[in-house]
Length: 179
Image (tube, rainbow, N blue to C red):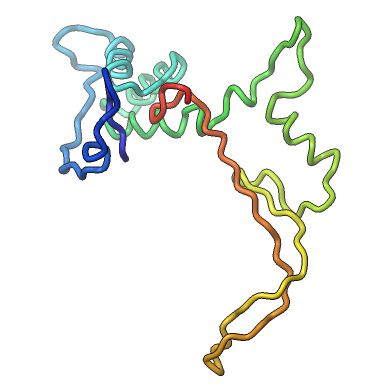
């Protein structure tokens, strides 16, 4: 993880790529606070201080779940929750319903993108699996090792191109600002 909070200017390269020492696990006390802050307010403060990007629904869920577990979360649990439930991973905006010029749209942005494959599936072996697609390939000659003779030989094989896509949605805890 190369996360660095830069308040006034970007971090120096040596700072970005330096190895930090191990840090102890920290319990984020939500339930037995001396300041009498509510669990939700305590989590809201931690969320803001650490830049986790949790929304109200996430925080309410986490407070309820950790109350059911009978303990407060640790900093790693909250950080990991923020990552796996971020827009970057869940694509809530891309999967949302939306209105254009006052008219509700039939498809989410993701289903509109995927609709191109529904309408024209030709030349596609696999689409929209782990942000990747495999297109129908062609025969080509490859140099491959022949282990029995310990030499290289030309082999004619069908090669299917793989196209990997990453949406890099913002904001996320890793990238809180667009760009």
